[in-house]
Amino acid sequence: MIAQNDTMNRADRSGRRWMTPVLLLALAAVVLAGPAATTALAGEADIELPDLQAVHYNIFGADISGPMLMDIGLVVCLLGLAFGLYQYFQVKKLP
Image (cartoon, rainbow, N blue to C red; front, side):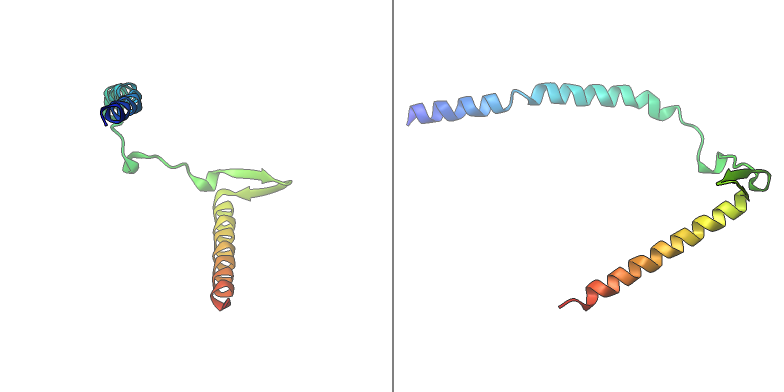
């Protein structure tokens, strides 16, 4: 009985060997990340967006304005939504 308990205690101690370095690493990460988190003083409201009317992209030889590119992106999103709904209803019909 004593030998079994001694073996179990050794297993517990060897299993805990990894705990000290991991805890020290986590503590170091928190200490080092603290100052980095306080230096970001700007929020989303402070972001300056470029004028999309002034931006033009050359895509496959066609000159596309910024708003047109955003409209194309919205169409792609709507196509993805339609595809997702189609797949959802197809799966819903399965037995």
